[in-house]
Structure formats: structure tokens, C-alpha cells
Length: 251
Image (cartoon, rainbow, N blue to C red; front, top):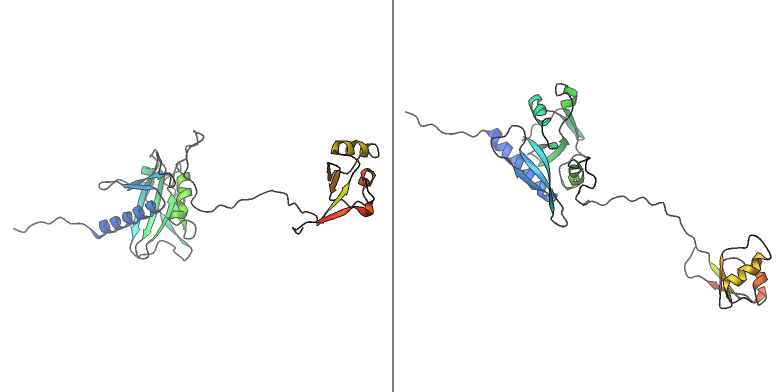
């Protein structure tokens, strides 16, 4: 009588290799990956979000389904991307989940991993909905995907939900005003010891006195040219005796 042996298929081995790569890349993001093991119906494991800076975890989970191939190309695969048609039963299963679900597509031949959120809240019978379009440049499953994956776990009903900090540099747009300094500051003695007194004297001359000046302790400093400014009326010395300070910083 022949002795029977248990058997593990090549596809099972491929699946284990793919899950191991997902485990490695998830840890590189600073998150945790917890594998289900056998049996499983359409979810291979869970990603738990973790703050890479502090190590804090907050019970934020994302379900993961891993699809692995050795070197066989995906549908319509090019250098830029490919398509993947989700199984009808898988989509129906994911739509019942109370967690966000992502699909990670693994190519063992070059250790490349790509990801996409699973179809949800749509008709699973529609092949266009079940067909995922993957961009190889944008949807790589690596540290650059950490923020986008974490965003899936945000509960929109509860403001202030924790998200891990970005590990990539962010572009910042400023609406600041550029300030250009003049090359020269004009300095002169004034007959008034305080700026408020000089201002009263200027208001006796004009309703709109210049504002680009300061006076303190009998000295007046301004960016304005004293030869053409109404400030000459509050000076102690002649305009010809007024001095100039040349700034060290160029305009």
C-alpha cells in the first residue's frame, strides 16, 4: 500500500513570498503588518498604523489582500503601468468589510510591489469598476506610499483623527511680500527731541506728511531724500550738512 504525502502547491509558495515582501515594505514605512495565515477568504493581513517618530499606535487598521506573480506580466502591462481585474467574489467580500481594504500586487521577478484601494460601495458586477489601473510611477508600495495609505484610515465622522507625520519633504507655498531695502539711510539733526513733536510740526505744514522716518533724541533717520522731502522743515542743520549711512546689504 502506497504511503500518502501532504502537498503544498507552487502557488502557495508564491503567496508566502509575496506576503513576506509586503511585510518587509510595510515595516520600512514604519507601520506593522500582521498576517492572517491559513485559512483566509480574501484578506491576507492587517496594516496597523504607527507613528514612526514616537512609536505610538492608535488601533488604526487597514486590511490587505496580496496578489503575487513570479514573472508573468499583468494585463496590458507596459513600462508605465498595467491593469488588474479583481475577482467578483473578492470584491463582494471586501465591500462587506468594516475596514478600508487595499490590494498589493507583487512581481517576484524584480521585487516590485504596487497597491490600490479595493473597489467599494459600487456594483461588483461592473467589470470597469473591478478593473484597477495601476501607475508604476505613482502607486509603488514603498515608503513614499505611507501617507496615502494612512489617509485611508481617517474616520471622516470624527475630526482630529491621528495621522502619522509625513516622512517625505512637502512643498510649501508662501504668499509673503518681498521687502527691498534702500541703499542709503539719511541722517540729520532735528529741532525736536521726540518723533511725536516732529510729527505735529509736519501736520501744521501738510495733511499727509511722509511716514518713512523716525526721530529720537534730536536725530532723524529716513529713507527719503532730504532735498526733496518735507522733512527739511523739522531739521536743525541745513540739508547740505545732513549725513548718509550706506547699508551693507544690497537692495
